[in-house]
Length: 485
Image 1 (cartoon, one colour):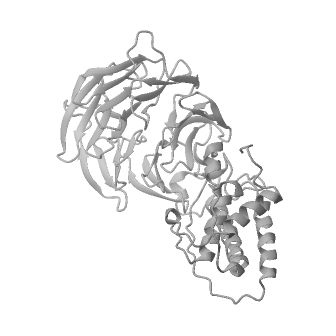
Image 2 (cartoon, rainbow, N blue to C red):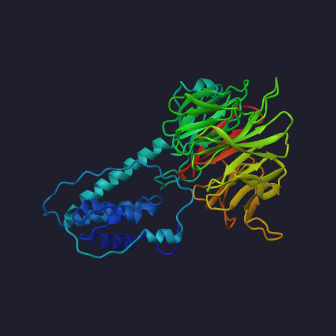
């Protein structure tokens, strides 16, 4: 909350409201409100003035209503006019990272022009308050968490209705406060691998118990997409195509699945370009779809502990290049594409390397690590994040100065991480807690402690509203947990 002005004092509410009521003859194209629609403009003004702050002090809305009621009483003899229909968009705003002072300051603008139809202000305000109450009810429904019977498995949970769990709330919030539980998956006897968000942020793809599951976040509906077909074990790698139509499944062979019909459209050999060893299976340990959707990076581990990354041209179905990484008992745990589709970063638990897909021998960055770790390019060019020596580190891969260090670093032990959609923040994990940092300054932003067990996976939703964390219990069930961000 900013401290420059108290926007909720009676004097400030009256002043801002009077300023907003004084102008009605000027078009406001940036908000799509034409001149001559005083009711729509009033509603727009109220949202504009109190949108960010109103979520934290509902009493200000009551103050606005009382002020408008007084104005209406003075103009009781004004002729009534019909109100136009107002379409209210049903959106979730689950914000962990609040507006900075300068952002909030921009939310309040002074304008001056005479108005018409002031007598309708109170009616418009009533509509606005109804909208806000309706939004509150919508958010309550959207933020109900799901949990199944503790003795059931994910394999039997798809036919059962989800059990509603009221999230933790803070008085005065219209939207779910930071860290509120949105949904919890049914328990599983196996770890949840993935999980990966669909590009539109409405679904999660997860792998557990020998099946690939789609989880509709809005309806909390689960359905099995396909069997993993990996000798009874769970697939450990999934990747959603950038257009959201296809899911790459890291079975052997690799399957490209239509996420609507569940049909397998094509397959790719995990042994390419080598011949398989009879009786032994090559494992796919990581997948990554290029940002433009034209290529798929496939990390494999072979029986001789050799680790490779194959790059497939998804338009022609042919292999492009192969990158060989040092052998590791756990294989390549993570691959990530740079935003320009040219470089891939990969980690095998011993080293993190970034290399040019046009010439895999051209390694542009290399750093030793001591355990398996996620590796991820930032949405901001040139920044690479991974975990080494129990710290999450962000490196500028183009800084080749002697003895250069990371851009920022902070404690983290689990080896999992996820960037916020715009690259400003980074989520990482310590034990059963998730910590969010400012990616550039290293400043601590938030600590989430709602997970029950060790956090084995993290994924920030594309809209920035939520984070899913995989929980792996040493003994007992495993869960995937979605919480507000």
